[in-house]
Length: 116
Image 1 (cartoon, helix red, strand yellow):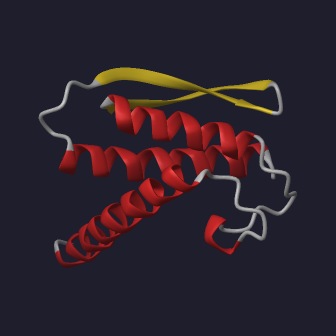
Image 2 (cartoon, rainbow, N blue to C red; image 1 turned 135 degrees about the horizontal axis):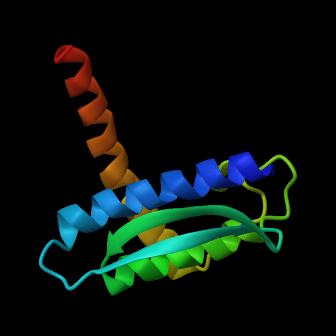
């Protein structure tokens, strides 16, 4: 995986988790922080800003760790990967987040098309 692909992947995951957290944990205490992007022990001099509750922040940091350690040169989509690296509880939570946020992102894109 290239540094650009890594940055794109983790930014997308962060966006999905942020949407989920905003929708489902609106009243929870959240921390505003930056995730410094490091890939293969090299700083990319970029960061991802987030404002998440503890549960969602844990998922983002977990996803970041797993993405950094992905053994594939051509990273497949996680659901099609022959070696799932997520633990069962985190995988279930990520699937829930992706379903919820994916629908919302899809609807917002459709809405933006009609507003042009």
